[in-house]
Picture 1 (cartoon, rainbow, N blue to C red):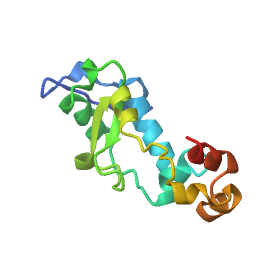
Picture 2: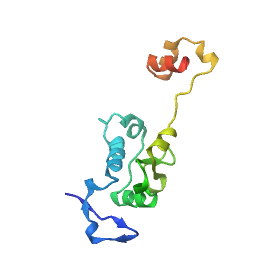
Picture 3: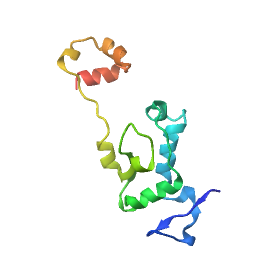
Picture 4: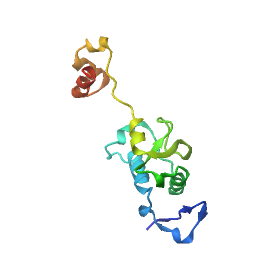
Length: 139
């Protein structure tokens, strides 16, 4: 079983060695890594499929957890500062899940000239499902 040391107020505490999967940041670590390396993951096409790499170690994640004060957050979520960059120490931070989801790209309605085109043509052109195209046209 893999174990990891945890920083406690900037110092190593020998009694703080515990299994890695029981760390509070482990779910974020595992989810981010899975999105980048596992082609069977549903979100892989948005992360690993676009070339985003997971380059964080458990030590770096635990350091980020303390650096960003994630233990004081309701639901901490890992965020990439540059959305096109990799999961790296200086490109990642922990933030509230609600704040992180509000930063996500939203569906923007198309302009009037795009609304005049046939929805099937638009969906084929942008490789979207017809339902997504209809929702964007009539939003």
